[in-house]
Image (cartoon, rainbow, N blue to C red; front, side):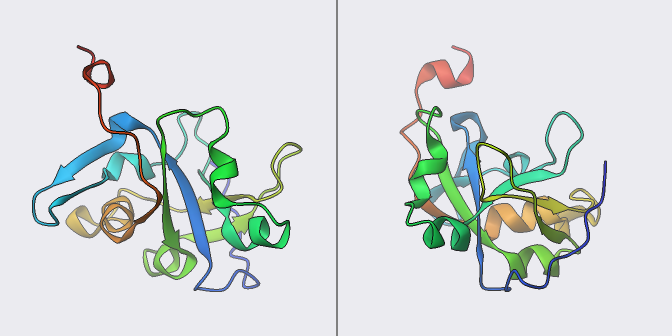
Amino acid sequence: MEHFPDDPSITNESDLLRRIPPYHIVMDNNLGARRPSSAAFEDDDDGEPMSVYLAPTLAAEGRAADTVLAGHAGFGLAAITAGLAREKAQTVHPDPLPQESSHTVVCGDKRAGGKKCAKKGFALGARWIVEPSPPRASDFGA
């Protein structure tokens, strides 16, 4: 996995948006609400860093946050801050794609640290921007 340098032009308050598929949503009885699972915050399956979308870029383009959900019916959209990512020893770096200018990567080991690992911290620190659809039996292989 390539490790991108941290970009200080992305402020700690900047929201990093992550698409959350229905199968990465858990009921947290402590919160009394559904939240993303820690598995929703792992690096991409192809070994690339975790993809997110930079909310300030979307806002500067006059786009609503939910535009990054196009083609992903039933997904939720969660936000963590760049500051939380950095607190968890991650770097945040813009990685625009031809089809998505707000694409950004979060680089670093997301599994290190046991119960204090980055992916767990992201799952607990995330907030919903777009609530996911209610779960269906087919989401669980039934």
